[in-house]
Image 1: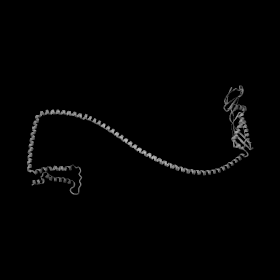
Image 2: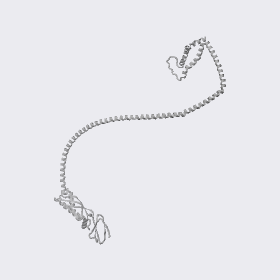
Image 3: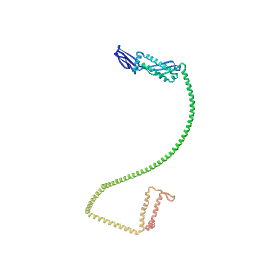
Image 4: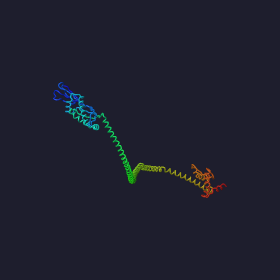
Length: 426
């Protein structure tokens, strides 16, 4: 027994022992008994056919040549068509099958050409291809072959019919083109004039609309500007009012803060006063009272000591007192005698004694007059150009003051110093 396989592009046919009718396996595997069973293969590949049909007279009697392209294949998906193809082509090569299909299609192509005119074939190739496809398919299906597609590739003739047909059509097309061009120019001119008229009308209308829109814009803008200015003024006033309120609240808060700070300061000061009082109480008053008490005790002790010492030294003090009294008495007597003698002398001399006392006093007066000048660190003098300048000026002023003293003494005491001194000289 042999195990045989085939791909999807072919089919196996097993016949012989154990098979009442041949078994067809498209693209699969099968067991085959050699000698008693026969295995045959048939191709399911697609085949491309070039169908040439030369010099065939059409319905109008014009001979043309046509070339078509067709794709055909044995249909393996349909069981009946596959059995029909096996019956028709089993044992034949792919070229033989191709030849049979091509001859069939060529006959049908020739037949369809005889039923149509050159113009129909030339202008409507799709109709021609459809007719050939439908007619050929009905026959090839009976052979187990399906027509996948058919296309008319080329049409030609030896008499120049197709060229003349093309020239006539070309001339007609050119004529229609010239007419169409003239009509197009006419229509274009008319349409251009209409378009220009419409353009100008649209332009004028557009200008009018623009002017209206500009007017409406200016009016609305003025209204909006007025509203905006009003709102802005209200906003500014509201802002200023709010700012004033805010400032007022801030000032109130600041005053409240100051009140609180002042209250805190007062409390702190009160506490500081209490603290200082306590500190004074602790550092000064209490020690002072203690010191007072100590001094009072010491004073009392000293008093008692002095009393005792006085009592002990009473006699010594008495003796000393008597001695001092005697000394004072003797001194007083001596001074009294001196004063008496000075008085007697003044009685004898009278004005001369007074003058002597004044003369003794004059240097002291001069010293007192010059004392301010001695204490000056800097003296600025301004001269008028007359009299002394500098130190002589200062000393001269001092001397002037001294010269005025005799007159002052005479006014106060009645003693003429100059006269008295003159008498004494004589």
